[in-house]
Image (tube, rainbow, N blue to C red; front, side):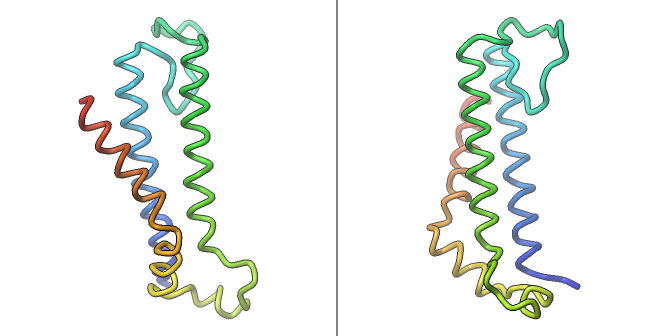
Length: 120
């Protein structure tokens, strides 16, 4: 059935990954570096492929992805009754949980989008 909880997580994940994709693509063009979400093929046309800056930027995006996944995963309660999990959590639970976390991942995603728009 339809679950607001699951739909909210998947929709958020979709927005997060889209913003990360366009930001990485834009930065890849600006810096002429291998910082796309998929690893470049050997012999790619990017001028910077393995230097320290590229590795640090990819590490930063990796840490950001872990942050987003931990944030979204915090909505899934391991101590909940199985019947509650089967029915899905309600909208109030999801909103309350994200409010407790100050909407951190959503704000970071918004900040990444603003940064992307500024450099476009």
